[in-house]
Amino acid sequence: MAAPGRAPSTAEKAVRYLLLLGVLLLTIGPFLWQLSTSLKGPAEDVYSRTPGFLPDAPTLANYAKVADTIPVWTYAANSLVVAAIMVLGNVVGATLAGYALARLRFRGARLALGLFLATLVLPGEVTIVSQYVTVRSLGLTDTLLGVALPGAIAMLNVLLMYTAFRSVPPELDSAALVDGANAWQRLVHVSLPNVRGMLSVVVIFTFIGAWDDFLWPLIVLNDPGRYTLTVGLQYLDGTFTANPRLIAAGTMIAFLPIVAVFAALQRFFFKGVEEGALKG
Image (cartoon, rainbow, N blue to C red):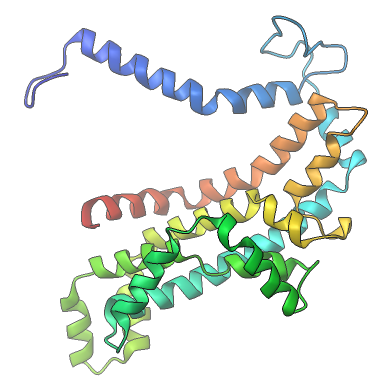
């Protein structure tokens, strides 16, 4: 590696670019392979010893067949409802909880923060039974609200917002307090504009987690008409038939909303990551 203050040599640059290329292939390689498979026609053999990466005759027929095989748009709408509930719950709940822990003084604040930290140690499988019992006691089994409720406020998001609010200079709060601003006004007009980057991180992580979740919706939902997209895609892999082209097309359909959300919020996302790296 190059010493501090010395420009890297040609060999060092070559090694760096080779490492970056390797990471890039490992990261987007499976995605590109799925995309290629989804565009291949029935005449192309995807099981050959050396399958071609580029389709011989690209076609979008596989995407139409996915819609004919399963109610993919209904499943996608169900996933959007679940994701919207979870994103809204985390944006509001994590923001309020993070601000209270970071900026407000009240008895038991440190204890509450310690409990939040303690919940991160527990794996999700430990609490899944108690979550199901709670959802069932509320009469929310086989409902989209029952799927979204346990993740409506994630402890990790609370801690992310807590860290973001802690990085805001306290002098801003003090100045607003002198001007007569109450806690709600200080949150909305002083603190919140300074943590929009971290808030976008919470939105993206929550949306991806809600959209990709498979186990919890599979446990809660019984009616196939209420299945989320990740659960409904299992019908593309039948007991007696399994068309890898349809499975790949379904995977691409499930992937597109994640790309859209990230593309819309990427500017704020990288700002939030930078804020966390510099001030966290």
